[in-house]
Image (cartoon, rainbow, N blue to C red; front, top):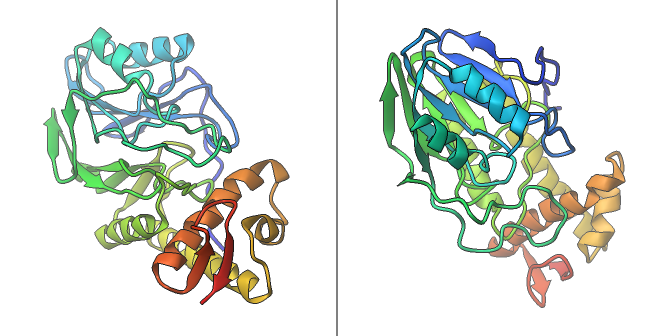
Length: 300
């Protein structure tokens, strides 16, 4: 079982100091894929004149924008960092950067359709373009803080995470979330990439993970081990359904996700597809005519 963490103290419009170098405020955009809303992080010292960075400014929402501007008032915003270009993370990045004089840094936006259906509300912002393109390995520094970029594709092909070296902490975006498992939705989401990125994060032995949605993860090693084990268990369950005679994703999902709200089954279908695409690539499963939501699958 994944030791999910779901309870934390927050209020919309309020900025909380959650560590010596991190302040957080939560946008008022709760939902089945955003939990309580998008958590925006201000990285840097809280005193006036300090140079700070903002991670994932969030959605276009006048009240949220006003709260974020108030949170950084008196300080210099040098960088706006984006973990990925889904609409709950990035739309405010450009307007906020223009008002604060910051530079926007992110990976290059995806070149293909983000999702295979309208099952999710996490589509990309098609108008977003960063000032500086990140690929992983870059180091960004300010007054008393140092952020390292880590490429973590899987949830999205252009997903990044950011390491706050002074606190051995990771801003994980949607790659790892404390309140839920992460959606991996083809064609932009990729299960093989996701598992490899998870291994990358596990190898770093972080003290804390700060997701964009929900509270921090402080028992990092056991949480990540359970998170990865869940993915492998789901893959085994998909293989078991094929062995039992299921041939389509529509047959598998009601069994595999019987305890999950039916409204989330379309998203679950995409996750199953991500597993099946990996299994087809592994030569364990074959698809007809090709690996897609409507395909038929069989064990090789």
